[in-house]
Length: 110
Image (cartoon, rainbow, N blue to C red; front, side, top):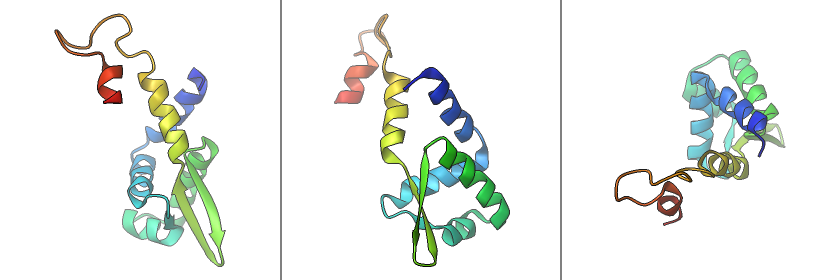
């Protein structure tokens, strides 16, 4: 992942409503949630939800799939993993994270 790509994803998650939406979809797991249920749980207008979903879809953090008349939203767990990997890729490369402690990379792999 390139720095600009990671920055765009983090910028999208920097909005409180989008972050709440993304966390909602992460909690839902691979089955995802219908758009209507997302709207209900977040308590926001359909147009507001649509705007925030579009942003998350553009940066690749969320996908949508039509199931009959229902639009299902899902977190892109692969992309989430790539973003986390990017963020920790060089963690503590210049030294341990804490005195006498392991580098973050070792902690994350445990």
